[in-house]
Amino acid sequence: MTGATGPTAVLKFGGEVVLDRAQLDHVLEVVADLTARGWRFVLCHGGGPQVTALTRRLGAEPNMVGGRRVTDLPTLQIAKQVLTGEVNVDVVAAALAAGLEAVGIAGVSARTVHARRRPARIVSGGGPDPVDFGWVGEIIEIRTHLVHHLWEGGYTPVLSTLGVGDVDGDVVSPVYNINADTVASAVAKALDADHLFLMTAIGGVLRDRDDPSTRIPRLDAASAHAAIAAGVINGGMIPKVEEALVQLRHEPGGPGVGAVHILGADGDILRAEAALPGSRGTVLVP
Image (cartoon, rainbow, N blue to C red; front, side, top):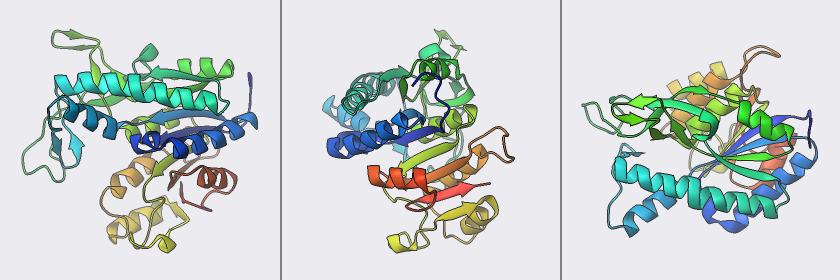
């Protein structure tokens, strides 16, 4: 696949998909098929359920504030073991079985995800005071040279979403835990990817979150902001949509992502969205 000139894409899926081997295998089979047709993918995975499970097996309880994980040093150690160890290895192994020349990398690798510690801030559901989330990072820069190097060699990068910084007090090159949606969006923008696929349990933006038949096939920036203001887009879907709008390419051939797809975690849905955006999920366009 060296020198392939087909569409470029970032695909993000959560740890729930990794836990369901049949679901993961089907998704990766479709990725392998698209890759054989000239597509180039970065696979970006989370691992929240696995981090929570190991935390509890070690006798601790996860500290969540407003649905977000507080990452103290013991939790960071668990995240390193789970994300760059268990989950990344499992995804790479499944990708190899599907026929992909997959290579596991961390955001730390070649400083692909360059980050700093996120300052304390007020968050929804976290009360009136700023919350210090510990060793959680905010992205400074995405460095794409390692991804391009792997693509040129015909490899598919499988990225775990830990970032690395410069200096934090006495800690040199500290490692940070970063939300996988945030990393995937930033990587897609830095690569000027044609597509960013965000797999979710909901499977798209719904006018009625309890009725899948109310899926909105296509949103541009204006209609998305109107839907947020009207309360149609609500809860955890708001930051996902807002993040996606920031990454979009606003002029033909310009920087940014060509289209952002919010879709269900299913290989057939991915294949349909790749062929006809908005056919099975919600596609966000400028």
